[in-house]
Each structure stands twice: as structure tokens, then as C-alpha cells.
Amino acid sequence: MTERKRRTARRVEVDGAVSMRLAAFLHDRTLDRFLAARDAMLVSRHYDPKSTVLPDVYRLLGRGLYHQVLAVATDSMANWILNPGIHFVASQAFRDLGDAERAETEAETGRALLGGLLMTGDGSPERPYVVLRAADEYDVLASMGLRCRAHQVAYRTGRAYDALACDDGRDVWFDVSAAAGVGARPGVAA
Image 1 (cartoon, rainbow, N blue to C red):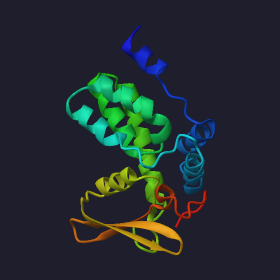
Image 2 (image 1 turned 135 degrees about the vertical axis):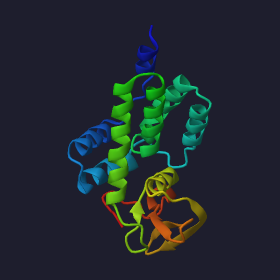
Image 3 (image 1 turned 180 degrees about the vertical axis):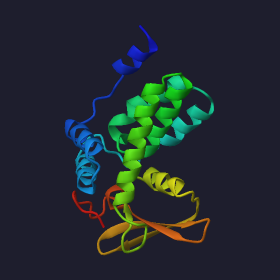
């Protein structure tokens, strides 16, 4: 059995609603479609905002263990499918293994999801980006060329927020209500 077939056979089943709504978003990249995919993830039995698999995947990538990167990413995809970073890591692993087509598919999915996150707000306290997990926050910062130097949690109007003080002096705000289990209502962008 080839490595490609083994990776396919290991694929974890993604909730049908999440998969269907993600496909709709990838076809028509609107805020409403992104939020519909996000809402489906919020009620998915696979959603675990506390999962810390992404740092493990980055470590494996840094060590050049590309097959292991793809195995862990695939096993985690039911929970992480809406995170841009997991797709960027999978893209790099596919690229380093010589599979340019799958690398580009993963990279494009990551870019689309990052675009969806950026549509949810502008990072101000009045219009924070709406995220499913902390890793999404760092994907947004990386896309802006920023690094976090301090982190503050705030609660107001029944919602939870992370305010990340960045190396350029600005604060970037994120609505983390879903991950915190606070006021997490499907269909609501701050």
C-alpha cells in the first residue's frame, strides 16, 4: 500500500454539516458562508477549542517528519478543519514530499479560511475578529506580520475577548466566546 493510500485510509470523518458548509464557503467566499461553516463547527461533536495539536505538528514539520505531520494533521482534521494554520502546515509537508497539487489545494484552503477570519472584524475592540481557537488568533497576526508581546482577557456584554498587544504597539482584539464557552451563539459575529 502506498503512503498516499495509507493517509487516505486514516482520514477521520469530518461532520457532514461542517464539510458541506466549508465546501460552500470555498466555492463562494462570503462572510455568511464562513459563519455558517463556523456555526456548524460550534455544534460538532469534534469541536475541542482546547486542543493543542498544532504546536506538535509544527515541531514535526521543523524536524522534517513530513509523513508524521500529515498523519497527525489528518487525524486532527475533524476538529481543526477551519483553522488556516493546519492547512498551511499540511501544504508545506505535501510540498516537501513532492506533491505540488495537494500542497496547493491545502495552501488555497488555508488562504480562504484566513480570508474568512479577516472578514469577521477589523481587530478593534468594537469589531474584533471572531475565532474558534487561540491558534486562529496567531494565524491572523502572522498574516499581518505581527507578533504578540502581551495577552489580556476581557469580558463584556456577555462575551469573552482576547486583546493581544503586538510588537508594533497596537492591540488586536479577538472574540473568543466560542472557545471560552461564553455567550457562544451560532451566527453571531461581534
